[in-house]
Amino acid sequence: MTEIGIVGAGAGAAAAAFVVDGAAPDADVTVLEKSGGLCGRAATRRHGDLTYDYGANYLKSDDERVVELITETLDDEGLVDVTEPVYTFDVDEAVSPGRDADEHKWSYRRGLTQIAKRLFGRTDATVRRRTRVETVRRVGERWELDDTGGETWGPFDVLLMNPPAPQTAELLRDAEWESPLRESLVDAVGDVAYRSVWTAVLHYPFAVDVPYYALVNTDKEHPVGWISREECKAGHVPDGETLLVVQAGPEWSAERYGDDPAANVADLAAHTASIVGDERLADPAWTDHQGWRYALPEGGVDRGPIDSARRDGLYLLGDWVAGEGRLHAAIANGLDAGERVVHGL
Image (cartoon, rainbow, N blue to C red; front, side):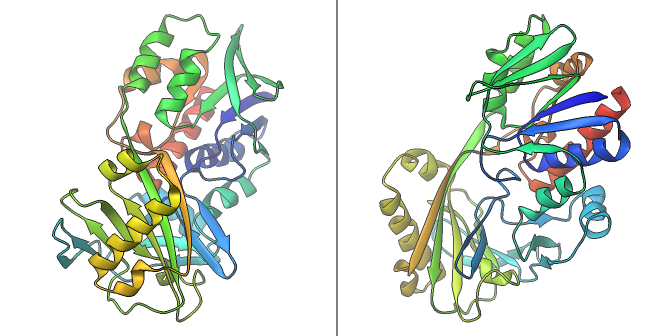
């Protein structure tokens, strides 16, 4: 029996586990996830009759393997496609038609977390939630992991790491692993810059009559970077109501990340009302919020050390390894990593 450990239960990890389980039935997969959820920043919450994706907004159809996985390999029950277009706005809040009108923008009636849930559901992997790894240790030719609760996991023949680059770098920097590769690997992973995103969720007991699904700020100079309408996803919002996911721009998010959440929500609601041109939006009936410290990687990573680490049975994966902060990129990278693990076995 080959023992495989995975740190993190994001979309990439779920895709890798799916590939390994299908191609290497003798492998035993254990996933340790620090949070109570699955799928990383492709996160979904529910509030009463509301369902909303408050991190990644949808899955793009930009990778043929991912399209086949979602629409043919996995159960596509409840898969929804946003058909309304994405419009743009600038620093002066001038709204214009214009982006991605013809591509698929997928979610599920129960939200984007269904991707990881359905992938893991097709495996025999053991997924341990609320288990935060704090120590990575190389023992002979295998790997062990200690969690913050004092439990040791492993030993594993193969270790996959799926956290964002800064968290992966921190674990590797403190790892009990005597290898000349470790320093160059830590440097490469640690050099990946990230944007923080602060998100407000705004609910209203009335419908907003606009022709678009979302607005994106194209000049990157407005405090708001993105506004989307969850009511455009079938099953997410009752008829006659509005639920907006408002993501602040990078500068605003960095400056206001630790500020009072109520004040942040009020500020973003006021900006939203001004951009959309509807003063009612400044006073939402109900709100939610989330800060994403490591939301979007801003560039790729030096793949040399990452490729070399595979010789020690260590695989790094995620959107930051793919070099694109998109959900489809994370899934595609997970599929690649899973195939490499199987080939290595």
